[in-house]
Amino acid sequence: MQRRDFLRAAPAAALAWPAQLSAFRTQLRRSTTPPTEDYWEVVRSAFLVPDDRIYLNVGTLGVQPRVVVDAVVEHTRRVAMSYPPGVEWDTLKQEAGTLLNGDPAGFVFPRNTTEGMNFVAQGLELDAGDEVLTTDHEHIGGLCCWQLLAARRGVVLRPLPIPPTPRDAGESVDRFRRARSARTRVLSVSHVNFTNGVVMPVRALVELARPRGVLVVVDGAHPPGMMPVDLRALDADCYASSPHKWLLAPQGSGLLYLREEWRARLWPTLASGGWDDPKLGADRLNHLGTADESRLAGLLAALRFHQAIGSERVHARIRELRGMLREAVAGIPGVAVITPPGDELSAGLLSLRTSRPALDVQAQLARAANIRTRVIGEYGYGWLRLSAHVYNRPAEITRMADVLRAVLQGRV
Ligand SMILES: Cc1ncc(COP(=O)(O)O)c(C=O)c1O
Image 1 (cartoon, rainbow, N blue to C red):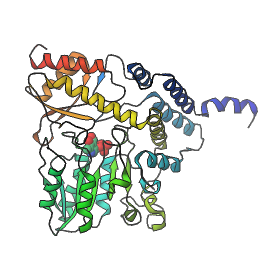
Image 2: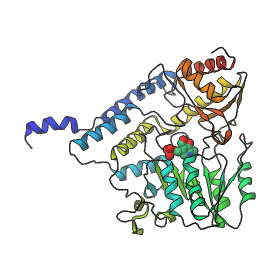
Image 3: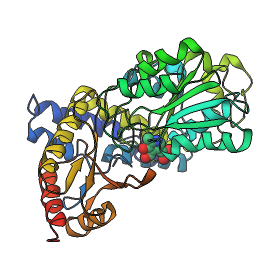
Image 4: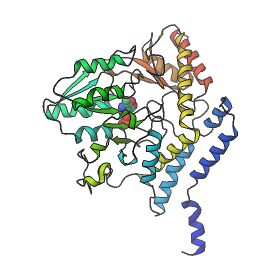
């Protein structure tokens, strides 16, 4: 390559996002400890959310910090310039393993929880009459994979009713204990229910199931990035997640973690080179043909952004904001909080029942103050769900509560 050509190509091919991230780290180090609102303003400045937008729906999709967007764009540009994609899968597995205390060899990177859960359901050998126990709080992304097996192969799917506001974790464990039968092969639960925000007792369910040879499959769409996740300690058979929610990764970056015994055993849904080589372990499921590696570059940047602030600090801030949301809405006439209090049973999501239909309330919040929320219409619940992350300001929560009060009083 001529020197002139090299100089022309190099700046565009070089990755700027790592330098951007280290500048962010330096900025954070200069800010106060323990973090005050000034610290969180520095964090907010790393995002693209406009000041007049109040985004309270990370539960559906996180907003990506600028550095994540740049990592995706820079990677895409490198590919367009004919440079090799250059995402280091091993690095990605290492960093996911560090954050979630998992063995790096256990990770698969599908596009989302839905894909991960389908890989699991399709990959198990379940026959007609085999039973899958689940709950009446599952999202279509973790439920339909079992419905398909029921329709096509005669697998029996039994959703157990779990109270909207459980008193303690033991209540759900009891439901499963009472419901299991000799034909039960799988317990499929969410780690955090998308409906009521309840943290389910995954570890206790594993203790109940494993001695009987029953598998525990977890829809972990929410917890990574929202609360501590210890995959080794949970010890579920399969754990699927969507880092594009609370880890603020690009849309379409999922992960699936397999316990050691399943890495060589689970049937791949998509077969490509090495699908039948048990030595490849979980990587048999990572051969998905040509993939969008730019989103994996973004996932790596998102993991590093999260670590730049620090997991404990992010989780504590999310709990603090959830506490502020609860306090702000609890006293409003016409609001009943569904999500149980306390850090054992809840984490980042807060669901409410409102005296006016939740869809109307949601529309009014959006119209009056550009506030984005989620309505849980599923199973006929009709709740309004709020979820905040590190980019949200306490003033946004106060504003949301003011508008909610006005909406419920018919003043908006
Ligand atoms: C509990 C739960 N599971 C699965 C999903 C589906 O996630 P994805 O669309 O990323 O597959 C969601 C999405 O909101 C969810 O809340």
